[in-house]
Image (cartoon, rainbow, N blue to C red; front, top):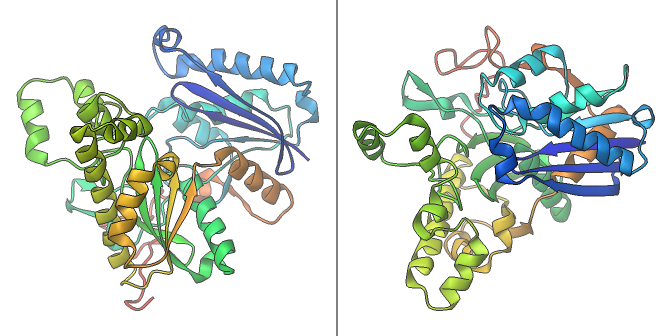
Length: 379
């Protein structure tokens, strides 16, 4: 079974050819900022990135007609359940319009659909908009603003499965707190296989990260507005130019750790504060699970940064055992999902049928709707 995986990021496109779940070829195509700035919009990049993918597949000797499935990293679209989704016209329309947000991951399904010969499945799995939140977790404090589930769903789900395998149990039998520590940080309560609460890792919620500000006091953000700062400038302060990048001038946590070891007290304080905020969020998610936590799982690139990991561990080890799975394997997780879907082990969902913004779906104003999670207190 030959599977092609396409994973576009803001400054790179990760590509893979898999024989089942075994990688036959992996490559990260880097894109310099000057080249990217030449495009007027994100969608204008699609033909260019597609040509790069076509050329790479040719270089690997991969004929498009010999591919059993194309699997793309999911982009910003309507909220959906966890699982495998077929890339259809409705999904492509939402990704192209960027009506749910503009991110390079929107390009994955678009490119995959253009590459795939007629009849070859084009899929995505566990996109960042997976939404399994309890209805009570959707309230923000004002009805005009609803908490959204946007997080590193693909890695969260994959690492939860790894943790469960290590513990000799099914994810459906466990209560886990999983923290993905990367350029963005998402901390989630996994209850019996479902992510019932999680900070929005993109829109300014939760801990600060190497390049995101996390939750900020609203009055401070209003002050930026009063100063006349453009919306895009403020957005850049929150996503891309916040966190370590704002405090230390670098979004590289290992560089910050090296500076700390060399005696830089500012670097030490900022890393300590980031670990503190992550630990505090883990504690909050432990409360969501009513204190019954089988394990706390740390993953992502920062899970290899000793000062951050130890700073978190010191503060949360009393809650539950701490498991560390550094890095992330999005490519492998996508290939695994494709193989399971093609083998009939996982259902392939239709986007239009399962999207959670359809009429009658769950919301704070309709907490008993189809798709809402309303657990008993001792669930």
